[in-house]
Image (cartoon, helix red, strand yellow):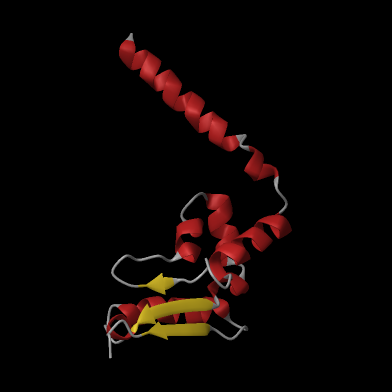
Length: 118
C-alpha cells in the first residue's frame, strides 16, 4: 500500500509540473526574464569558476520547453565570464566555444576577473 501511495504521489507531482502557471507565460515574456537572469548587469553572468554558475545552462536544463527556448535565443548566450586561471584551462575552451557559437550573430560579452591580490 505504501509503495502504491508513493507512486500516486509521484505521478501527481509530475502532473502539477505540467500545469504550472509559468508554463502559460508567452515565450517573449520568458525570454525577457531569462535575459535578465543570464545577461543582466549584476545577476546574469555566465561565470565559469570553481563554483560553476552558468545561468544559461541551468535554465536550459529545467524542462524541454525551456531547453528549446534557451537554445534558440542567441541573446541568452552573449555573456560569459571566468577568472584568469580558469579561462586558460583547456576544459573551459569548449564551454566558451559553445557560448560563442550559440550567441551568433550577437557579440559576446567576455568578462575575465583576476582573483589575485596583486
